[in-house]
Amino acid sequence: MKPNEKKLYYRLSVALLTFICLLPAFALLARVGGAGGHSSHSSGGGRGGSGGGGGFLFYLVFTHPFLTLLIVCAYLIFRYYTRKNQGAADSESNNPASDEQPAAPLPTAPFPEGLDWQKVNSSFLAIQDAWQHKDLKNVRKWLSDGMYQRLTAQFKMMNALVQVNTLRNIKVIRISPCGSKNDGNYHTADIAITFTMDDSFTSVKYPKFNESSIAETATEIWTFIKRNDSKQGSNLYNNNNCPNCGAPFELKMGEISRCNYCKTLTNSAAFDWVLCEITQEDDYHAGIALKDEYYLRLLLKNDALFSAQRMEDIASNIFMQVMEAITVDKLKRLSRFADDATISRISKMKDQAPPFIFDRLYLNNVDLAGYNAEGNLVKLRFNLKATYRRVTIGDHLQMLDPDFISRPFTMELTRNIEVTGKTGSGETVYSYECSSCGAPYTDTTDDLCTYCYAPVVDTQLNWVLTSFEWA
Image 1 (cartoon, rainbow, N blue to C red):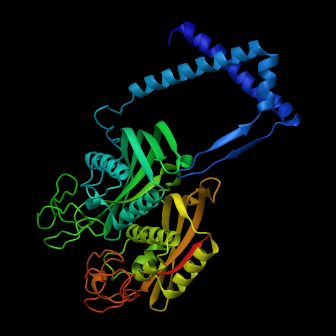
Image 2 (image 1 turned 180 degrees about the horizontal axis):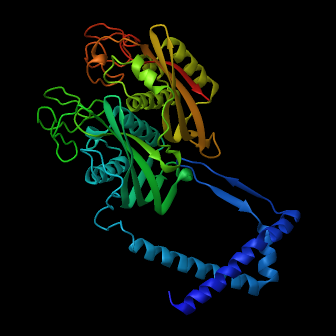
Image 3 (image 1 turned 90 degrees about the vertical axis):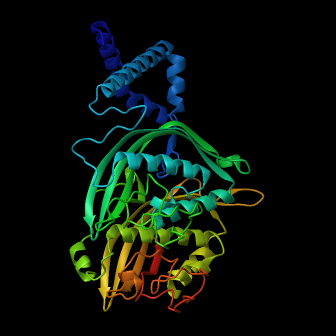
């Protein structure tokens, strides 16, 4: 910036700041004159806005037009040079974003072994494409069961509202590791992804809720998980073959991502890094550990597959299935993972509300918050937060919530401290295959496995939902 430009920029900035300092006095006069205001805010998918102060603007424009013009000009010049300087600073950064690829991570935040920005970048772009087409077959191989359930549950709700989410001009600005730790026999990595895109939610049948944004910039934290004893050399991202036997993947992998030849679960953290959580930047809280986590791990020392992140993935899987069951007449499906008392309480919650579906449902975060040991049982307590808006559908769409609501939930999962069967020795698809023999359930409403006749809900074999509350 030239010296004269700097001087003008400085003087106009001082004038603008002086005016801002005097603004409360003018605003107070406007409020005394009857001007009011309101504001609304929502997170995790909502839109915010504010209003009020109209009396003051009317007074300023029509009684001091020259002052108004001066203020506007000062503000525009101020914004111009602010953006210009910011752009110059960005271009001189040691880690600039590229039009061809996202910026490499800072040297002080290395990726864990086996995970790099190429894998994260390819998975991010592929999942955006899969999301807008509501088709996860090409990305299922690196999605955890809980992550898959989050996305498919939203697809069903979007289909009920004939909604399409179109994403355009997607550009990844930066990919940077922001947290990595050992979690039992697993390793987790939190990766911050900053991106910009055009985002449009539309429905031909219900245009009332159509929304769009242009060049919206956001940062999300993507959490990946991998077994410490994972198979070396496996890569779920750059090929389309089973990591166990090498056979080509089936094209129609859905709830269960299993190789059609060797029957191996292919989306397993035993082979490569698997995406298990997406957290918005405002909801991310790194470094908060479960109180007395050491004693919980000691309590479950014979369960080689126990990890906090894996349990949070199971909890998110259950949460989305519960919320889906509440919106449709399919409470019977809860019998795969909930005890009778919990199903009864959820049924009462459903009866207390009018029939509805979600016009968006975002699970903001899931945290293993505590535990309690009672005899031979251990009970894990989870705190969850979800953002949603409920609507009734039919000939006319009616909103039950005036705006997006962020609400806390609590959940409890119970299991025997000592477990038997397949749960203690290998990976299983929670609530889709028998924890005793590993056979897939042929009917998701059966109370017994059709192969070994083991009960589907059994704390001796697997985690059972024993409490679910809207906090």
